[in-house]
Image 1 (cartoon, rainbow, N blue to C red):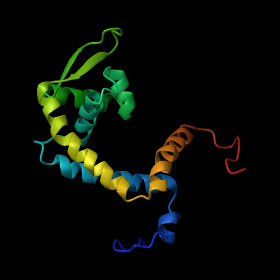
Image 2 (image 1 turned 180 degrees about the horizontal axis):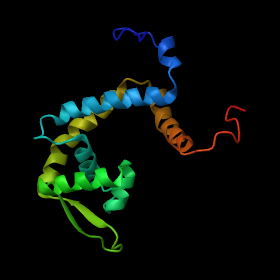
Image 3 (image 1 turned 60 degrees about the vertical axis):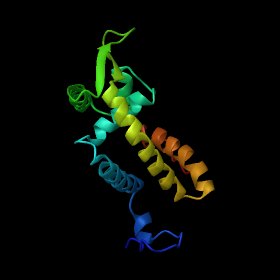
Image 4 (image 1 turned 30 degrees about the horizontal axis):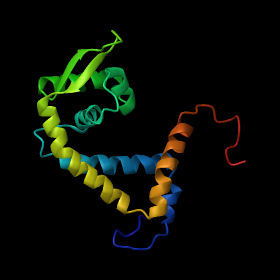
Length: 165
């Protein structure tokens, strides 16, 4: 059984450790997505995928359509539909990519910048609160652990070596 939410005991419930890691991560992802959707619910129908695109463009992590799509892990169809709705709502602008004719350059429109400026601090605070649930040692470890898990998740052949050996 999952542990009582009011418990301050840091030991894991056997049920929590019984589920495979992928299921635990999926359950956490569903909770985080629901939490983010609750924050976005006040934004005139802005969806979580739309917010994620606005955030990545606004953070200037990537501006080319392919780079933004790959950064977010969206499939081409979902990405194309989401970009179309963002353009239709006046949140982003799409133009020619300066060096690659196969993709587009994505920029925030003034309305998209206003959404980013309003929601960014709220969701940054949410991230700080999530991290505050961890000890400082856990905070230092989680980024590295997630990067290692992400790299391990890209493997498709599992019979080559035993990773615990």
